[in-house]
Image (cartoon, rainbow, N blue to C red; front, side, top):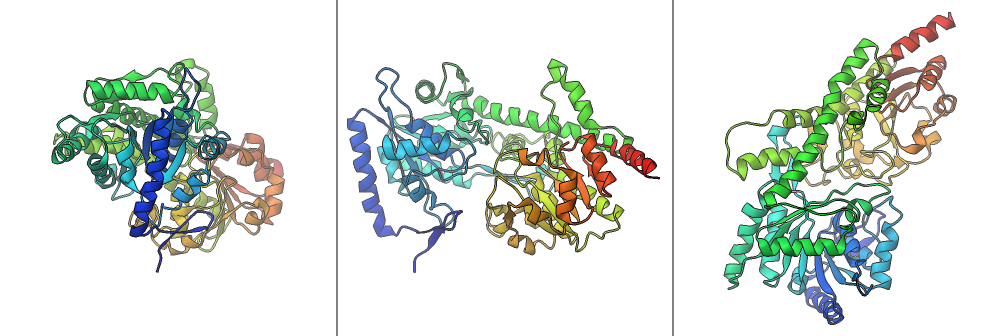
Length: 546
């Protein structure tokens, strides 16, 4: 009986059997040899997920700056698991396996696969034998054992270590291996390089592996491609040859003329750069949590305060944190540094104070948003247990379809734990796999469901796209993400669709004072993160109504 891998749209693909591997390698080998005879460099991208799929297309779209002809032939390699194999046949059809709002992604993938024939995908990692360069885009996660306790976590190194071992056992001796994954500082030099040296020695190869690191700075949304191709990069190599090779490779595939490379002396410096920049970002966002609470309790509108501060050029990057800091990087990267300090670099003292606290604050912020929803319901004399709440926005940031570590997930789980019936609307999503497949997604035993009670029914959640239908009969609406379609919602229409006044919770400064006032005039209860002035508006409305 065949195992299957099922795509997000429900298409089934049979997992290849062992007898299929030889024929698959012959197919890839023939394509690679033809490409090499045409002067192209053979690049294998290990992992065609969120970063790897688009990186593979960008490399495949590269042209020789002198001739204008395609310069690279790219093989995207993904292990044939039931969870991920579907990406391979989709990519070979010229379809990107990751959803992207960037209009440049789909045409680029299609062009490279179907027209230029510079991109192909496979499940057979023997393709590594053909490589001149390998780009590693395999995840290195940081899993926390307690919600809001970063120190309880650990780096999940197994997948990356196994991938490096496989690469080392198959690649030609002079192949460049470029780790693009965000990793714990010290990983490239003190974990990956020794693995590769040991494998090379076992193969009788006397030369040092050519190993480099250059982290990605991918941002989802309409500038997805530009965040990889047209953005500043930091890189380094384990030896002079690796530094020279990685500089040459990145100069060929990225827009380094306008966005010059920064070349570090050692990979640990490149690795640390990514960890520090994301820890800094997480820290300045966490900083506003206490001031958000201050504002709620003292009648201050923090949104107006932030706008006033941003007029000062030196403070123009201050950002309201919303219901939590999601995305793949900010919630975990500081943890990789904390873990590396002890478990890779061997120190036993505790120097980290701000970074763990910032991540813990950000992880728990969604709980406060949920508590505001409960208070709003109670102020309308509605018990949370059995109440219907529409959560508007499941993504971690506006106008993208990316739910990784979304603050909305914490809201949904906490309210569900308290007996609330959750509905979800998001114009950019088809599925919310963290809920729909919480037993296995993002991996077995790693769902945030383990931190909450009574989570089973969330598996039945389906994303709705008809806002009027989603609101029908709702007791509350939570504006969790500032998606474009939510910014101009009319209070009269919202109440009409709900069928009665309802509780309104604004997590992101979406509502201006006029809309807040109108909701209150319509009999709604309004709560918002960081906006204590709502009580003053409410008192004004009540005074006029008398």
